[in-house]
Length: 169
Image 1 (cartoon, rainbow, N blue to C red):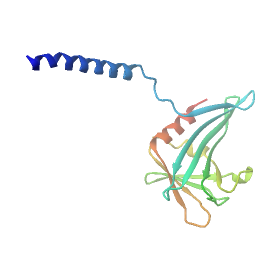
Image 2 (spheres, rainbow, N blue to C red; image 1 turned 135 degrees about the horizontal axis):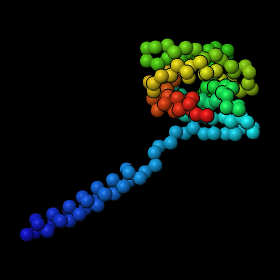
Image 3 (cartoon, rainbow, N blue to C red; image 1 turned 60 degrees about the vertical axis):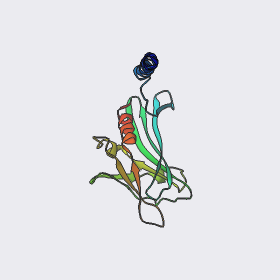
Image 4 (cartoon, one colour; image 1 turned 180 degrees about the vertical axis):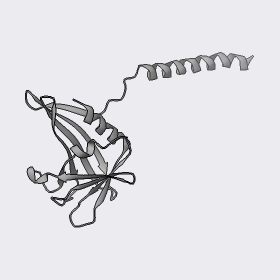
C-alpha cells in the first residue's frame, strides 16, 4: 500500500516537469545573432558583428566584421582585428585566410587609410566573404611584428554570423 501511494506523486511530478520543459522549448525565442545596425547618415548604414576570440598563443583579440551600405549598395566590407595586450601588427601585410586545408585568399591590409593604432589591423574582406560557402571554421594567419605569424581560429558560429551579415541589407 505504501508503495502504491508514492506512484501517483511520481507521475504528477514527472508530468509537471515534462509540461514545463515542453512549454519552455516551444515558446522560447530563437537565438539572435549579434549583428547590430548603426545608421550613420540618412542614406548610409553600418552593420557590424563583434566577437572576442583567442589565438593559438592564447592572446585575446576583438574581431569586428562590418560593412557599410549606402543607398542599398555595399560600399565596404572590412575585418578589424584588435590585439591585446601590447600586440603590434605588421603593416602593410595582407591577412591570409584558410578554411580547413583550403586557402581562401588574402585580405588586403587597408590600415594605412585609417588613423588606427599599431595593435589594430584593418583588412578589405569583400573578396573573402563571397567565398564562404559553409560554416567551416576559418584560420586567420596574423602578421604579428617580431614573431612568426600567429593563427586566429574563427569558430563555426562566428562564420555563420559573418555569412548572415553578408546577406543583411
